Amino acid sequence: MNRRAFLTGLLRLTAWLSLPVAHAIGVALGWLLWRIPNPVRRIAARNLVLAFPERSAGDRDRLLRANLMETGKLLLELGPLWLWPDARVLALVQGSVAGEEGLVAAAWQRRGAILLTPHLGAWEMAGLYYSSRHPLTILYRPSRLGLDELSVQGRGRLGGKVVATDARGVRTLLTSLRDGEILGILPDQDPGDEGGVFAPFFGISASTMTLVSRLALKTGAPVFLTWAERLPRGRGYALHLRALPEVTAAASLEASAAALNRGVEAAIRTLPAQYLWVYKRFKTRPPGEAKLY
Image (cartoon, rainbow, N blue to C red):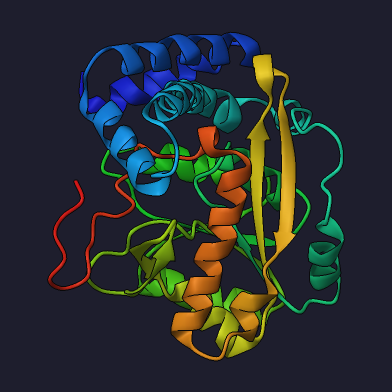
């Protein structure tokens, strides 16, 4: 059995689980990741040292354990979120979304908007919720795991239009924005040596995508940031939404990218255990700086 078939089968298997059971298994998986030395734990631990140098070693270890358990939940919830019936998925959102009025107004007036969904909490849930309520074009980076077909189908099944991070996808984004639609973009991926500028993120120069800032500065579209907080014991998700006017009002591309990172960082500080610390966010370094991993 090839890797693609195995992972697809695993996702379909987890879709048979209730969310409390899926999250409980994820907690067990995360505990093993915390107890047994492995590359995932090493990367997360390094990121926590970089991001929270003011915390004690014991405090960071407790955060590391909680974070790896949340990462386990993240893996186990993908099957339910991508494959459950639409109504069952949407019923997982608990309460109303504070601050959604601004996004609703932008959609109603067809001014267009950019919706940032960083790797915080259950970003797949956030994308599904907003695509069920607004015309949403979602940008994604093709995966090396061979799950693109399943992930595109899962992310777009509630009305979202899913496009890849290539020239055609970027053109589609600009067209959708000019047509008054909403764009869904993950803003905290390392773009590498090209396509980014360095901006502070947790006090560290981080290679930051310029796509969001270029679109916002070019069109004047409002920028919002959202995340789906994972509630305890599989009770569902609480969605949060904030406006980031500084990204659009900035005087330069660099200032806009810095405002974007400040917004993402502020959101993460409200829920640090649910950020994707297992990702090498600081991999690309400014010229002359030593590697951090």
